[in-house]
Length: 381
Length: 92
Image (cartoon, rainbow over all chains, first blue to last red; front, side, top):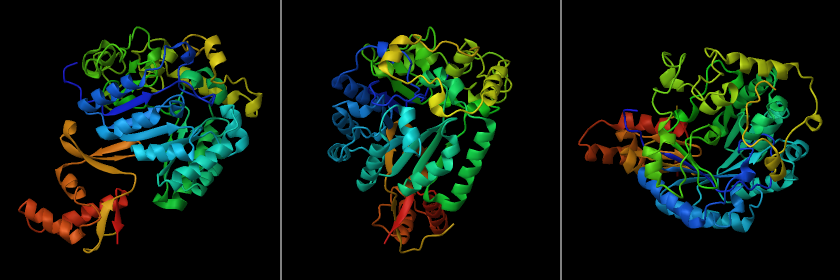
């Protein structure tokens, strides 16, 4: 590592792993129930101040469900005072009118509301809760308080055919931004991968429907269609390279260079209880490990595209090959690319079944205690 | 792309925020899930788009500040681009 890295512009605080929903595609670690106690308010406020002093400016407040933290308003207020642009990433469960008004007063800039589907049936099944009606009311509340309506829907085999209805729902709700985020296979989604991967035909239909909708509404609604990287020929430029702009802090204070990096073996991520954000960002081995290009192996090391995609996702490389230094197998230049194409082929070959007939593992406390401690390699399942 | 009239008053669109970031030595425009780092002239223009100044006033102010002439075309073109990107909206 030669050049000193820039500041951690993007700070994500996962305030809690507690969540009223039990989504089958959640990226949270499957062993969340075994992690340590949540940070207290004072420590979160110190993290905010230290990161802001280094130049952090975009703040995501996430979880789990961040509304379960009773000090959320206090955290938002402190962040606003420091000059952060604050995004609350929420299921909407627990967002009452009084709470929304208090968050607005505290300086919350915007709210990203998740929906699991356009139908009550599937929304409630996939999250293993009865939340569809409540979310619809929350969406109206968010608009009434003058916030831009930002919807996020995670796509997979069971709802990707409803993209047209999902977009129509978003339009009815007056959404300005809609993120159609195809599932990324980490955490619980990795555990359920075989049951969630869509087929190529489903994906092509969804993209065509989205294109048609875009042509109709113009720029009244911004739609981000995040293509599932298993269907790509090149990897995503994950986090713009680890340790380049993004810093996540988990509920127990573990600092990570990406949401999922806790799974990487021997990373030994630092903890904000023990070190300053400055020491963590600039000096810790965990944040320096995948900076620059020295860690790369072939075919990345000599690849002309290495400065564009940084070899893709380290967690995906680890999950699929067992070695975080390999090229992301999503890349067709990777010697492990067949692991991705085979997973897609297996999903294609599986006969279509309704969601409730699948063996889906829901994100809940009991399952978290029972399942493998870390998402082990399941590539050969 | 629609060029704004000289008497219209551009303002940063709701939900977006423009601020100076010392760590980046630049103005940045913050919006849901993203951030644009602005170059010097873009920062100078957008920081004057406060909903009270007209396009003509913004141009005149920039010509004075930078001791330059004939900035009208470039400034209007940038404001049009920022409207297109929905960074700005026009106030009556």
